[in-house]
Length: 297
Image 1 (cartoon, rainbow, N blue to C red):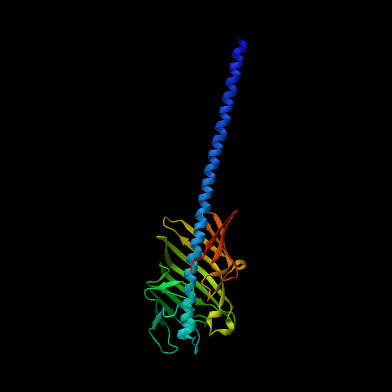
Image 2: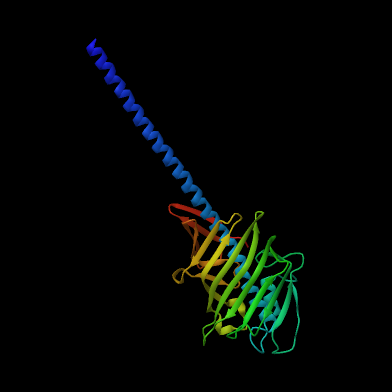
């Protein structure tokens, strides 16, 4: 009997120990699963923000090119020089736009241009612009100190509504053509979600300075910071460093080179735009996750 009770006590102890071990591992597995789910949520939020950044920044970058080309056509990039209308039409679409100027007197500033794209028209890349944009020149685009203010009034790109103010300031020195670009109160609607956008970047011209009258061969490198804010207050910060500067050809609808770092709640991903080829491909890299994306026109 004594041996029997001892055996029962030992057996009961083993059972209790097994239950404790099982409970421990079950709790550990549950905690690990929860952590994995939270990690995936954080990663997915950052990847989504990175994809949105590629779209939104492309829309606002395009406004710089529009102002540059309209300025060339109107003769407001530098004194005494106008671009050929056929080159402008090729960029913005043949028969797709017209514009009015409030004051056509030479060398009297500011100049306010109302640019109209009408109900919608595709350019040579298939990008469909519609509505009106206001562009105010404080002086010639290429002259240091000039400020160009761009305001989308009823403007859409591929049916995406765009608002805000983009202010370009010429900070060139000598033969170096350089501009600051600040976007305030920007909003775009992506898949029925309104996303706020602000930006503070610097554009330095790296090609085309020998042919200022022809802006179609201009290439700029872009550095600086952007910010996206989603409904509910979730924000994404974007940084482009000098070493990974983005490259934008005026005649290319997409960023062709460089990297942007996108961070949401401490989780960072990199948008890699490639090595200088004008195409609509990019990748988003986050740890061991790589997502290929197609940039919109």
